[in-house]
Image 1 (cartoon, helix red, strand yellow):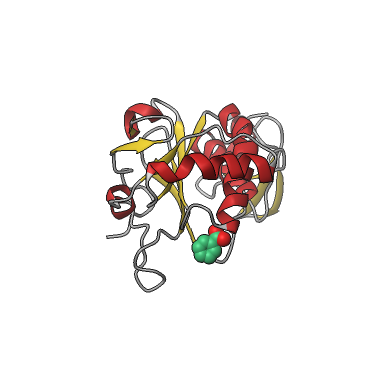
Image 2 (cartoon, rainbow, N blue to C red; image 1 turned 90 degrees about the vertical axis):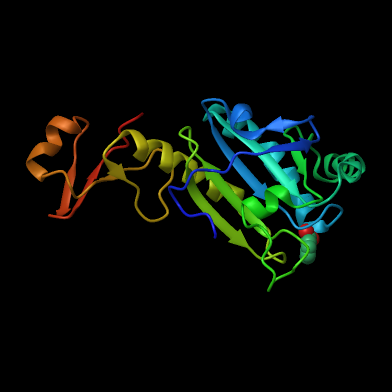
Amino acid sequence: MALRLGDDAPDFTAETTHGPISFHEWLGDGWGILFSHPKDYTPVCTTELGYMSKMLPEFEKRNVKILAISVDPLSDYKGWVQDINETQNTTVNYPIIADPDRTVATLYDMIHPNANDTLTVRSVFVIGADKKIKLTLTYPASTGRNFDEVLRVVDSLQLTANYQVATPVNWQHGEDGIVVPAIPTEEIPAKFPKGHRVIKSYLRYTPQPNL
Ligand code: BEZ
């Protein structure tokens, strides 16, 4: 069955471009992003993996590790990573899982037979420090993902895990959050001393509390 939000992120051991990884141990007490791509030496994947390497410092600031995966063998990666570095003007510096027997792809339901019965789709899993699934995304092979959006969601997840706020449409780090409905308006000043605005009894904004 497909993994759902709040499920335990399945643990596994796998060969990667950085050597063998035991997933939960590798994550330690931090967050993780596991993302699959259909195939090595393909154009969209080349741009995606390159972009992710440029974003790695932003994820690291948030204590998030990055791990890519496809069903290609380890021997394919060396030349392709060189191509990514050359064409995307970067250095891929996070591990990529080689999963030719589809062990991890099957655990995470990354093969969607009605799309393609041999290749992984473009899945993204954000995994929290508690090793639970916090976000799932599935894109078709023809559409490169927006990894800026994944970073935005990580910011929202890490904020809302620690404060009684939610984030509104198109929210970006630094913008006001929404006080969760469970908090009565009269209790807001004590909980959110930076201030608040009441638009409706159920729509109350407060400055981002963790800044
Ligand atoms: C690509 O990454 O360019 C790609 C991979 C599989 C199918 C179509 C495109």
